[in-house]
Image (cartoon, rainbow, N blue to C red; front, side, top):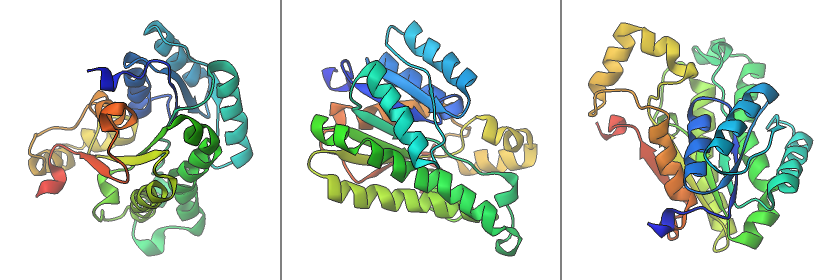
Length: 253
């Protein structure tokens, strides 16, 4: 369908060097977009940029710490210089470090703040930095949250708070930026990535997740890229302020 065609558009993907972000960069490129994957690792970004170019699209190498507004501005300016104005921002950068896991009284202020700064504050900063381009070009923001943004998860309080916040931010930003810019969210379930490697290798926990999931498996990163491409494209031209859940039915129970 032509509505899914992103030819002539420039997309930025934060956390774009691995896992879900890498798959999203590939998916956007296959839909026709020029894609700038961003992360703090120049080497990893260069690898994904080359993979975008192998798919026949333009890319560029830029690094970015989403918790630093000046760093974000510099990276987005580099993307504009290389690829042109920004049409799509995918806020995928996210963390859930070991220090932020545990009962509420076990999580330090620093660990709580770090997770919020990356997962929620980073998305807000990146969207604001791209705002002028997005409004001029009728652009789209896609925030990558989690099922942890819809339900509670024990021992993951900073992560759950940040992802609930991202779902709420999506709604409020969609209201303020309509009708020029659409803002939506994807909430993945359990996906096979570096972040879930330990979980997937724990046979008891992995089995309990699969048992609760009607599709009886973890997702592959590419299965999250499809919903993001949809929301970024004209196929979702009447969709804003919503959260698309891609969890194999995990939250349906």
